[in-house]
Figure 1: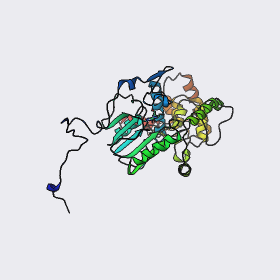
Figure 2 (figure 1 turned 135 degrees about the horizontal axis):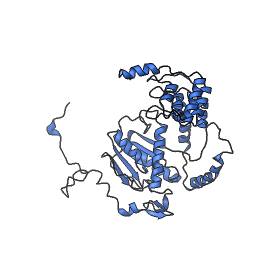
Figure 3 (figure 1 turned 60 degrees about the vertical axis):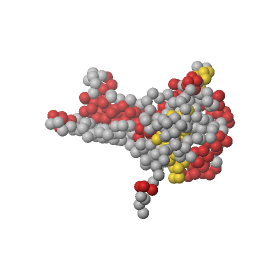
Figure 4 (figure 1 turned 135 degrees about the vertical axis):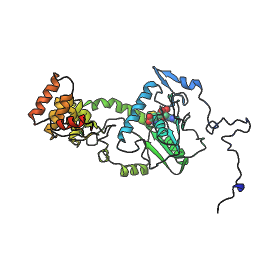
Length: 374
Ligand SMILES: C[S@@+](CC[C@H](N)C(=O)[O-])C[C@H]1O[C@@H](n2cnc3c(N)ncnc32)[C@H](O)[C@@H]1O
């Protein structure tokens, strides 16, 4: 039965209204936080690097511009890994998150992107204030130690933690996970992404005498770090991860796509990176992979006078006269490109022609262009 409006008692929200000051200005997060003191920004300087001071020397990584840049690269790499997904920011099956927390937010790129994409309230927490001059209004950064008891009033439907490895001891991880689970809404998700800094290969194809050997120095450091701040997951979690783990090739991640649906093989062909091209073909990239305009790697190699890549692609069965959706063929792209006297272009043209390349489609493209239909 519908309730009578007169029965509903309206009371001030204690978080929003401050009866003692009579002020309506404070919002619900100001009641939990204060502004950041400037000595926190100054940090602690050692060997030319700046460190956070909230946990004294307890966290190993610097918090300075150089470090924030590496976090930015990590953020982009994570987006690239998930670029085959509609939402590359997280995998949890939450379509419209409402309350999101990013634990150890670093420079805050993930929190900002999530706040931009969703109509959610996103909090990013870290030991050092994230260095952002522009923050979406639904995003708030807080300086705090997540190893202290959490004081947020709200529960979260998504808690995200990325690259925390090395940051916490086993006991600290246990405390942190407990806090995360206790601060989730029913049905909420906790998502964590970690990486191993050592270079490994899932098919064992890294030869022993490559620069992999120099990694031994880092391996030692990593072991030391691991001993210092071990990230030991319990067996149940490890079994779950083993069961649910998909090889990245199965997820198509080896063929991430950029904004114009160009993939790594198009870029390798363009830049004449024959060794990379060879590896990509070996791991199964389609030799005639199509970008947004249905251009093939050979079309890009031709336009850029990338002779080595042209030879390799044709040797691997690339279609010499493929037509894209602008009626361009590899040869017609080459002919439109750059200085006709350019040696690389000339050599590539000769090679293409000797292998059956024609200007097929160019006339049609010219007519359609004149008619304004291209
Ligand atoms: C490797 S960075 C990752 C940053 C960010 N999540 C990303 O993916 O770009 C780890 C971050 O965790 C933060 N951190 C470490 N211990 C913390 C603690 N006890 N409380 C809050 N943040 C912490 C560090 O300051 C650092 O910014």
